[in-house]
Image (cartoon, rainbow, N blue to C red; front, side, top):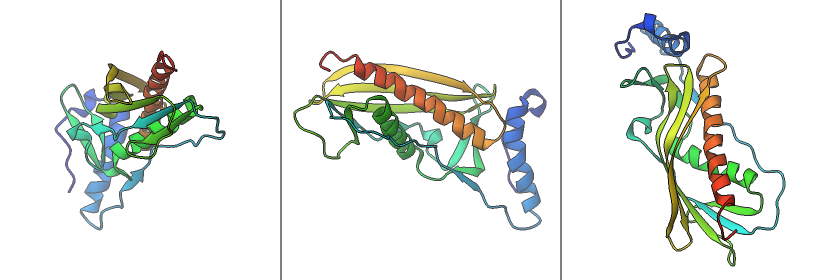
Length: 207
């Protein structure tokens, strides 16, 4: 039988109740029979439609994620100190890997004259190189009806010299109940993070 952390449901917004009570009721009914199959989710993606001559090479390192995010279950933050990892609503692939792939896609769209690859992949010669490193501390639903992406990024040149680092915190309101809406809103928040990085890259003096 599935149990959830002790909370006071009357004090939680309807969004959190809809996200948590659904899986709980399904788990309770599963005690009398077979457990329902979990749902798995991927962040939505968009592929670039046009290529341009490259004037910059960007390497995106694997995205580091906090320990409470390093699991299959999508995370909800219940209050300032409690988090809940869903048991029936899971990431279909490793979250850090998905975030890296989505960042690469978004940067490719935002900086069409740049070659954007994962760290370790072949890069163009004769153009400036930038290395992006990101550590994500929050990527989860929030009890106030928001999706939250938070962490820190670093921007390095081709020789490994740190050019700039900054923290980020992006909140997006959910427009609907349920985990599919949460996943889409988290993806939109991550796009904002990628756009912040794209803007920073475009301001680099060597470009």
